[in-house]
Figure 1 (cartoon, rainbow, N blue to C red):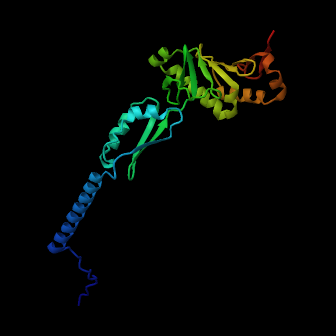
Figure 2: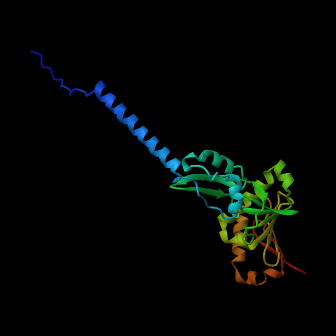
Figure 3: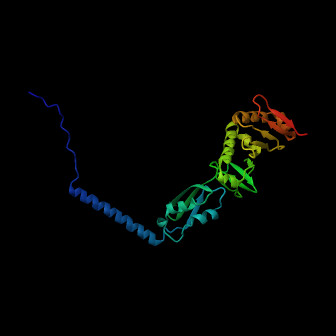
Length: 255
């Protein structure tokens, strides 16, 4: 006699039309209650926008940001179009990112991510350059003490061809990778001859010749050289530091 080894499966429960009906009724009632409460709150003025708060801004003042945000203070906080404000804010070239949110009962918070200068460009005026190569007029709150200034390039030429400014950004990154503190010793990076950029040191204005290749090695040699106190003591008397040779560093004094 054949034996049936199949185990019986428990029957699946399916909602009856009556259950579906009452679930739908409760859902509609819940939404209706929410809508009514929302309308009452809106009409009461309790959720009217009273404050627009800003965070994340170091260089832009709140007046500048507000001119782009244009939040209507006479509307309900629920009627504020967050996506629209975000898009308007991103029209400000100094901003890389924006987050707009509601803070109940009556505030709008605008959190901004500003473009950070990685170096400055001197071309009749002073411009900031961020890590993407964006060139913008320097803002008053941007401090110049610890970032190098690029010379030998023009804003007009960069707008046509960004190759040179990208090379300058890469050079600054390499300097930071080798020795982050070394950037504070450099006042200027001259890119007049783009193939052989020169560094100008803060103390004594000594010019450092880097050559065309092996920048990591040459930056390391410069870092090691400036770590020696005797060199630092006489830095103001040095005219040039030549790092273009593979096996030596040539230091030329001022006459």
